[in-house]
Amino acid sequence: MPGKCLDSLQLTKWIWENVKNSRILIITDRAELDEQIEEVFRGVDENIYRTASGRDLVHTLNKTDKWLICSLVHKFGVSDNDELSDEDVDKFVEEIQKNMLSNFETKDDIYVFVDECHRTQSGKLHSAMKKILPNALFAGFTGTPLLKDDKLTSLEVFGPYIHTYKFDEAVMRWRGFGSAL
Image (tube, rainbow, N blue to C red; front, side, top):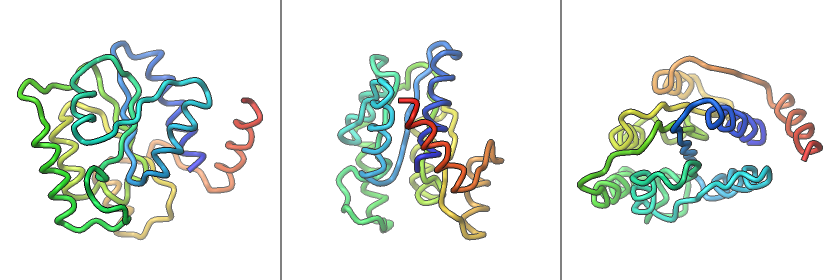
């Protein structure tokens, strides 16, 4: 994860400095990754807001007071295991739809960075996010060696790779970044 965190941090800073009225939403699928993202961003004095629920996510996106947001894609009211059943996904989508405001419209230009994109973004969850954020720009991050089917799915959902690097390169970048703090 360190290399992906650094890439998302650098891209976030560039967008914020160069794209007027931009907002960044970083999505992951596990609480420990959500916490790690928050820690990395706060470590360089970026005030990132972690949503507490699906309702909080919708309300935060409907306002403009927070420009940097992180959230779990599906852990709102579902079990803590990493395997989601179709029923879990349906419950998540139902909760988000139930909490949609009648006047809901995302504010500003939303950039969505999806961490571990190969795991949760090829089915109903991705469709739900695209429905909620129809004008957002999505970028998928993955550091896991992918099976051929997963790799094809990630490419179909997010498009061609922007950048790739090997694990040892990520470790070296992280060590260099950490010494700069």
